[in-house]
Length: 106
Image (cartoon, rainbow, N blue to C red; front, side):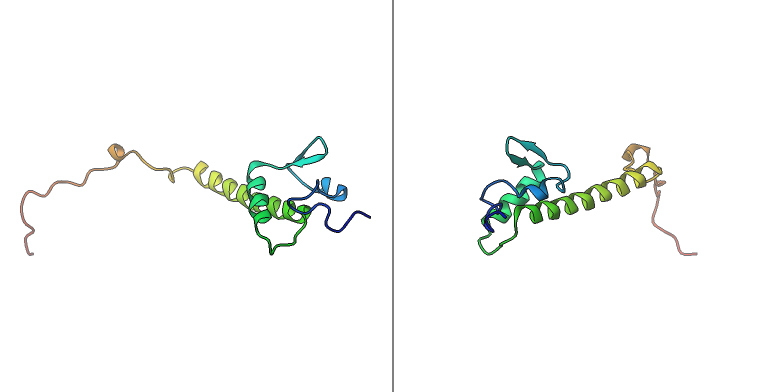
């Protein structure tokens, strides 16, 4: 069993059991190479001295955030592909007819 502090954020590489559960990360040498978004999240978590989560748990959190973001992008892409939701060219908008005089009472 590895040392309990092994694998924490400024520590050594993630515990080997977590390596297969880290989607989107590749091994570089003996270290896990996270995606840029995950790396920013891990660096921010490493600066928080009160946080005691292991790298594996932080990587799983980052993967879930990335999944939510990808789902949001997929929903937005589906919305945009349905048509009539895109930003239109202002020149293509119908023009409001010009008023020649003050409004009259009827």
